[in-house]
Amino acid sequence: MQRKVTKAVFPVAGLGTRFLPATKSIPKEIMTLVDRPLIQYAIDEARAAGITEFIFVTSRGKSALEDYFDHAPDLEASLRMKGKDDLIEALEPTNMESGAIAYIRQTHPKGLGHAVWCARRLVGDEPFAVILPDDVIAADKPCLQQMVEAYEQTGGAMVAAMEVPPESTPSYGILDVAEDMGRMVSVSSMVEKPTLGSAPSNLAVIGRYILTPSVMNHLNDIGEGAGGEIQLTDAIAREICAGEPVYGFRFNGQRFDCGSKAGFLQATVAFGLARDDLRDEFQAYLRDMVALAKAAQ
Ligand code: G1P
Image (tube, rainbow, N blue to C red; front, side):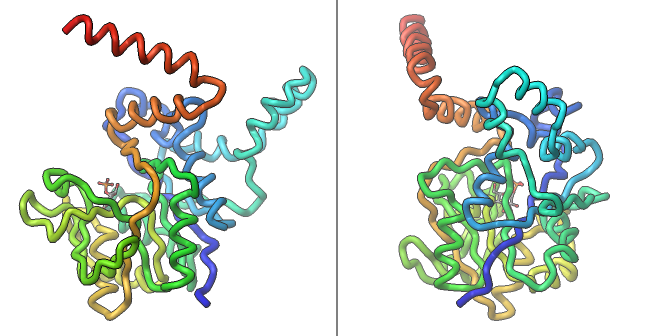
C-alpha cells in the first residue's frame, strides 16, 4: 500500500506575460473559461483525487487568488436576501476549509523546479501532487484521480504524459521510455525542452505530477537547466539516476494549453459546448460563423 497523496502544490507565481495586458492587474490563473477561473478547474481536479491540503506558490501581484478562496460574507448575505440560492451554490467550490490552503511566495522567478522546492517545508516527508493550472484537462474521470489510482498500484513517481507532434517537442519535458506498457510507461530519462530533432521520443510531460519527497533534495542540488531555470524535469531525471522508479501515465482526456492564446480559445469553445445551459445557442452561433467564413473564401 502506498502512502496516500493528500497534498498538492500549485505553482502560480508566473507573470503570465503571454496574456498582457490582461495580466497586468489580474493573475493569469484568475482568467476564466466560461465562468470559472483556471485555478478553480485545478482545485476541483485535486479535490476529486482526494487532495485535502492545497499549497500555492505565489508571487507579488497574486492577492486576487487569496481573495478568491476566501469566504465573502457580504456577497453571500446579499445573495441570500435576494433569494439567489443558485448563485450561493455557485460559490460553494470557492470555499476552503480554514487551514486547508497555504500560500508561500517564490521571491525570485527561478523556474518551475524552484517554485516546487519553495514548498518543501509544507510538503514534508510525504508523496505529493503538482498541478500546473495552465494545463486544463477535460476528462470523464479527472486526470489526477486517474493518476492517483494508478499510483496506488505502482508507487514511485508519476507524470502525466501525452504524444505531441515531433516539431512541438522543444516546448515540453520529454520522456525517454524504457518500457511501454500501454497506459503506463517506465521512464529511463527525461529532458526538458530538447532542441528540435534531439528529443528521445514524442511523449511529453503534461502538468500533473505525483512526486516523492526525495525530489526536493534533488531540487536543492541541481543547477540551472533549460532556459537558465531550475527545472522540475531535471530533478525527476535525477530520481531515475538514483534508482527510483518513474512512470509516465497516458491519461484519458483532452488537454488544453491555456498558457497559450490559441489553447485558451479552444478550451473556451470546448467548455462552452459542454455546458447544458449554453450549448444550443453557442452551437448555433459557431455554425453560423463557420458558414460565413466558408462563404467568404
Ligand atoms: C512545464 C514543464 C514541462 C512540461 C510543461 C507542460 O513547462 O517544465 O516539462 O512539459 O510544463 O505544460 P512550461 O510550459 O511551464 O514551459
